[in-house]
Length: 74
Image 1 (tube, rainbow, N blue to C red):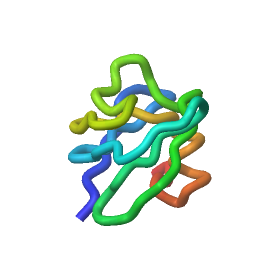
Image 2: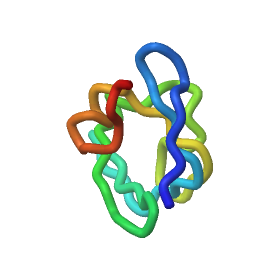
Image 3: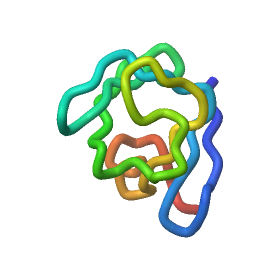
């Protein structure tokens, strides 16, 4: 089960994510058994997941989360 929470007004936190691969523009993250490309431009500077072989809390923009169907505003 994916565990999301609001980080602040513009970002969400995805818990227990891990980065599998990295390119110059994006990272491939495993979230709840699914691989998803995340643009580096959408990752908050406080994110624990930001490059290959990192894991923990992934902090990404709400906009990106909405585009991927991972976040809905209440």
